[in-house]
Image (cartoon, rainbow, N blue to C red; front, side, top):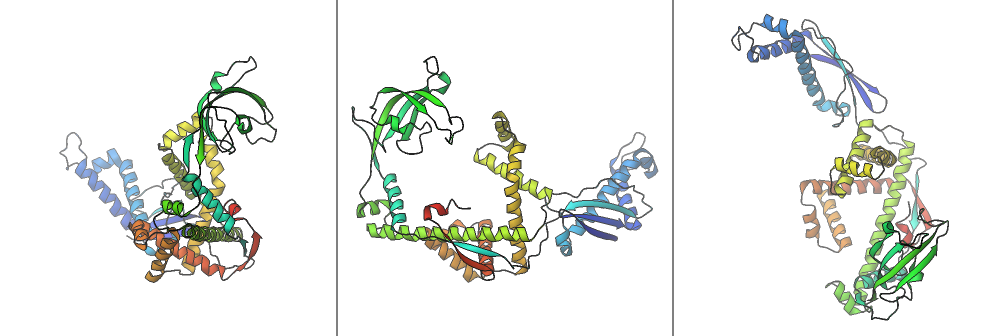
Length: 453
């Protein structure tokens, strides 16, 4: 097909495509459409397939022209966008070309039409001057290992009922029935809660009545008056005074196992001694620390690159990302996106408000992804089979599994492609960190490392 095209870049990563098709191809498109009508349309007084063309043109002229124009536009756009030379000018898969107005169609003249559409944002990252990254200073030692061991003890603890007459103490697991008492001295039915279980002295108790429960016995009922400070995190409780009727239904005591070789062997057959378990904990904590520190360095790098290289995200791209997040949230709730919206509306919230709250984070993520893709292409980042194999081994070692298990996990073609892409991305970051200033940051406790931005 013979045509000329002109592509003009617009703001917000959009493009305008103007195409002029030679009149010979316009005429052929019209004849082809008219031929289909001749074969398919049946009009009284004529046999099917034998209706004269001029009769069809008088009866369906405008419809034939419109269909011929539509087919012509589709064919031309397919030819243009399938051209490998037009990779940068292709519309985004979720952004169909838009035409403000269908132009007049005359089979005896050239046919010109214009469409606009969103394209993948273009950004060229060349300058790394002024970019620096601070590396948090975190140490992992006996205290961190002890904290992990405490968690292991709690997960392997034996839980037994306390004897009748024994009092509730800190760290006991209690089950209570609770209800708020109104000004008339009666329980407020809507506040009744049966079988509420929590561990005394932890943050699991939303009523904050741990101290008041201590000393109570199984089956005992007690009226508790609780005054909440204005600084209380729960805004509904802050600055209020509540009266509760509380009945203890059950008290359990958790007995922690001894920290010895037996515990280590109970955790896994690969541990023979407590020292083996401690060594593995230390190694895993250091792996987690290194992974988190690199993640923080990458986040800092990308934030600076976004600030240094300004570009706009197409609205269609942002909307697709937000819709994807909404669908993912629906999947987490094991429902459909439509039913999720009804659930949210019923709770007094609006889908639009939630999407607006997500917009900033979605834009940041998309810009980061685009910058990384741009750098990967510019630096021609690739990995060898040996580098991929090394990555399999490193992942296997950090997770305490075999290389074969890791490979099985990524056996699916798409999963394997994702894994290789991640190896390439990590290689890109390592290359960039060699070009920019990486200095020592503040000392951070291991426990606070995963709460840091």
